[in-house]
Length: 296
Ligand SMILES: NC(=O)c1ccc[n+]([C@@H]2O[C@H](COP(=O)([O-])OP(=O)(O)OC[C@H]3O[C@@H](n4cnc5c(N)ncnc54)[C@H](OP(=O)(O)O)[C@@H]3O)[C@@H](O)[C@H]2O)c1
Image (cartoon, rainbow, N blue to C red; front, side):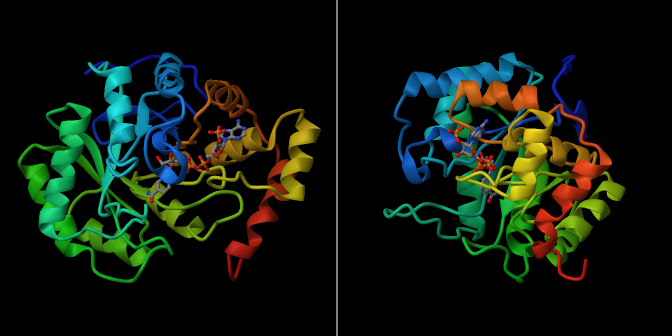
């Protein structure tokens, strides 16, 4: 396996035996509206994926339910055969219905089918990282993840998965997964305005486990806050750049996977995320997330 010298903001992180750039790319925005169907401009979607890899990004986040299958097909068309320094993380645990909802699908057969769907669509013999997505559209739920996680451990034993992670999970579920088998990452919602996982991030950093925030910019509508705009304008940059720089500075185990359907935004994000925030910036930005941190 080769690694690649990169000048991306944030340098690299060791995800098990995979060396990946802390600045990654989340591919969910490449579908049609509502994460359903093909993108309006197929070639533009391929161009974003190729631009990400050309820029040195080695960590791409996907799921076969994006589209469904649309994003995985785009990734394969744009990048296969994959350079051996490109690593793709996917997730299982939900499906899509005819209305575009995301019903849970965590019975052993569902998990096995989802892993094989991802292998087939991406055109690989083994998946680099599979996250077990728990909870539902309202967020994490307190329930055991043992059954689906043990199914994934079995598929890992078969050689179909290199590394496991968990997503949309409570602190208790992270602990449960870690008792069952090794995980390399936790993918939960976290950004400047949503900081419920502050303590979990620090705990995972101590354990050498990556924390991968989904909706790092705030999701379909990037976070807007007076403090964020003030820091951005004082630094002559954009709120999106400040949001990404803040995440990369927050903890070394944070890997960012900002989503975009635009090559221009991708380049802006790479250029902007290297900003070094000073103590005054950090104190101002800290005020945004206080609502999400009871007791802090
Ligand atoms: N585990 C889970 O349950 C879960 C859930 C949701 C997402 N995810 C993963 O997390 C990744 C990131 O989340 P996300 O894409 O939903 O949200 P996000 O990264 O927080 O934000 C994406 C939004 O920001 C916009 N944006 C990006 N760069 C911009 C820029 N420079 N200027 C202005 N707007 C900009 C994008 O619009 P444009 O397209 O116009 O740039 C898009 O609307 C996803 O791609 C997916 O892989 C996982």
